[in-house]
Each structure stands twice: as C-alpha cells, then as structure tokens.
Length: 137
Image (cartoon, rainbow, N blue to C red; front, side, top):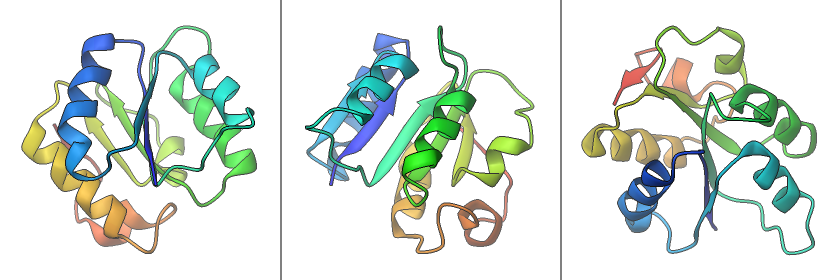
C-alpha cells in the first residue's frame, strides 16, 4: 500500500520520499491539502498505509486536511509534522504521531516504523505505543 506525503515544500517531499522508500515503493507527494483532497475524491485513489502531512500550508492547513480525511477514512494512519513548536492538542486525538522539523532521518524512520506496526492507530498509537507525546525530528 502507498504512503502519501503532503507538504508545500518540494525539498521536504523529496527528502521524505527518498527516506521512506524502504517502507513502500509507492510514495505519492502532494504540494497542498487541496491537491490531496482532489486526489482523495478521484477514481484512481488507493487508500494509503500512512499519510504524513505538514501543518502550515496555503489554502487548507494540515488540521483541516486531517478533519476532511477522517470524514471518509477513519482508520488511516496519519503523522503530522511541523516547523513550529507547541502544536494544539486536538490533532493528537486524530493522529498517530507528531514531530517537529527539521527532520532527522533516524527519528523519522523510527516514527514511521512504529506507526506502521502499531495496530492501535490512529487514535491511541502515540499515547500507548510511545512514551513521548511528540518526538523531535
């Protein structure tokens, strides 16, 4: 199954795509929440194993994107990343993990591996499968 990456920074999506090849050879990148929602409602959409999304993006931010994804896919695993500290509490209720930019490959791969292997996602993975509330990348 594919992994989907949503971030308005092309360098980030390229970096993540290369780093995550060991987990999936089907990685799709989207430059905005609007692009992702267009794909979500298309005929060729395949539900991913994992969605990694940035928080701050033009148009639809990551939190609104998660809300809209959850309306149709309640069980998909979602990781939120942000370059800003102190994410609001609400996304943690609908995501598996959060981590901060700048990205660290070792921590990123650990978070992704843990999320993909967690059978309690999306609602309790970070709380019960990981002792930290957020892992810094």
